[in-house]
Length: 131
Length: 110
Image 1: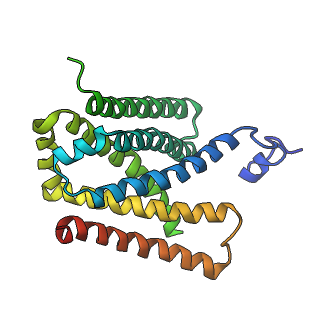
Image 2: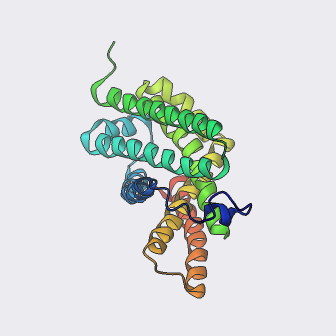
Image 3: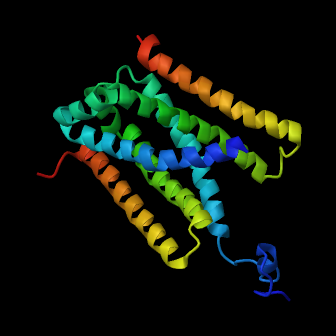
């Protein structure tokens, strides 16, 4: 009834119905958080249980599948969860559609680039540098 | 209220500084001993330690308040007393876990 007619925020929102999107984003954030609960605990436990934190021990740990695979998952899920979380933050404070799109796109590029660099580093540790 | 704000603040800290340090750390390891020496020098400086301890606390705070949010997503834990106790416990827990982890890393570990 009162679409756009009221000057108050609740008046503007009333009658619009749901946004019809965002549910998947909300759920993905929860699912990745549960995965990170496990992967993060694994990471902390590993750091605590390693005999030392010198580069030799760390490379030995992360070049074996038992270290490389969970770490790759931690990187992928970590960057995804960070991206989803940052989007909530940006959407809460940047309302102008253009700026919102630019910032969210920039964050997407940064997250994908950071994830790719980290996975490349893990590949080098497992298989050695190409040249 | 404060725990909710902390959840955001620590989430941003982990997203920006945490993932930057993680990426740098992995690249440093991939670069071999010389590359890792640069990272180690930075992480052993007092400012490096402050950043790492800050990120450790952020991680535990975000993890514990994240669990709190997951519980609240199910509709549980909204009673005032329980809600407040749970909120305070996330702060106590994150500080204790951070202290224990760094005590182990800097002192106790043989």
